[in-house]
Amino acid sequence: MDVLDRFGIPRDAVITIGGTVGVGKSTITMALAETLGFRTSLEKVDTNPYLDLFYNDFEKWSFHLQIYFLAERFKEQKRIFEYGGGFVQDRSIYEDTGIFAKMLYEQGKMSETDYETYTSLFEAMVMTPYFPHPDVLIYLEGSFEDVINRIHERGRPMEQNTDIAYWQEMYRRYEDWINNFTACPVIRININEYDVVQDRDSIHHVLEKISQRISQNNRRVRA
Image 1: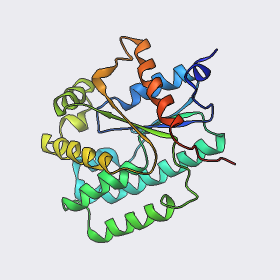
Image 2: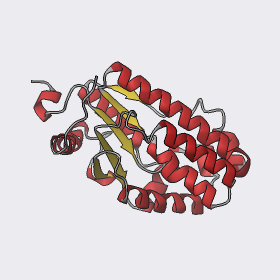
Image 3: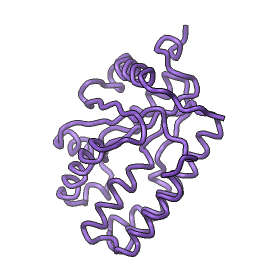
Image 4: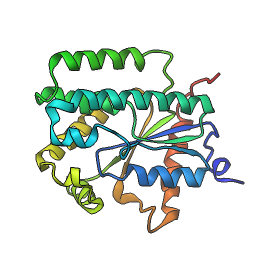
């Protein structure tokens, strides 16, 4: 019996990983994909032409960055479902509008016109009956201290040079966002409950939660 049959996880499932910067989304994405035999959909940070520019000048590049993310995530979502599922996805498309664009606008780092244009485009692309939502969103959470320590450990210069107040605000907004999220079923997992780097078997804790959550909900019908 393979892992999918053992845990009762559908072979065409789409599992999305959400959570604030530095919480370990990419690590658990890779571990789940390897264990399940699924493909991965990873956030393309290193090839994003606007990311470094954005961290140096939020006001100038915020709209460009968010439009780029929206386009790339939409194309990736389309690719996932064209393959017929069987994916683990690093970060959801919903976080872009629910957290990042909203925060930039409310902090005065994105103009009202740009924000309205962005949200209108997001709603036209994503918030329709035709957009395929994931089977489950795994939300990784931990204390703010845990998150900051992980950001420091991975050592990305653009993140190291960002004021800690930015990370505090993002952390708070993520908590508010997930408490009101309804687009698909959610599993909340504390990052201290597993360690897939040192203990690969700890991924079974996550698999059990995925199995339980999917079985509790009627899955969408795919063509």
